[in-house]
Length: 129
Image 1 (cartoon, one colour):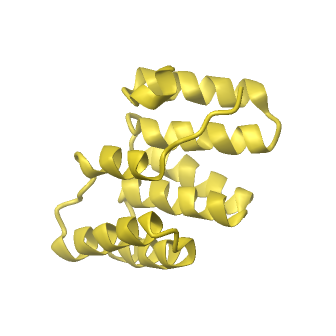
Image 2 (cartoon, helix red, strand yellow):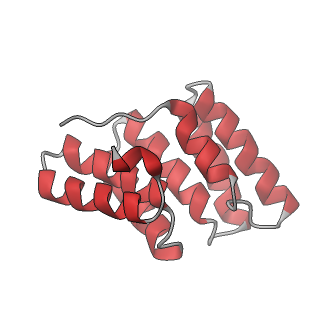
């Protein structure tokens, strides 16, 4: 079963509680979200890099950078970012969901299904379908 995610679903979900409190980092994160929403994945990665220089523990920035890297075809780097996002915030359902998509791309269906279940359990409704 192929799962898809609307471009803005991730952003709407990451918007709630994703901001770290550092105005500069949060502003860059919002810019990264906008770049991703415009399908400028390379710029989104670059902006997330800037966010993570300011706040290395910004889980949502790791998740967004992982999603952008997935869409750029850099599966290994995407996986590393998504793993980091999950390590920083085990309740970030979007990160599990995207990692599930990456596992599907790699043909690892059991891992994908486990991540989709974790995403649903963390409250990411798209994964519960």
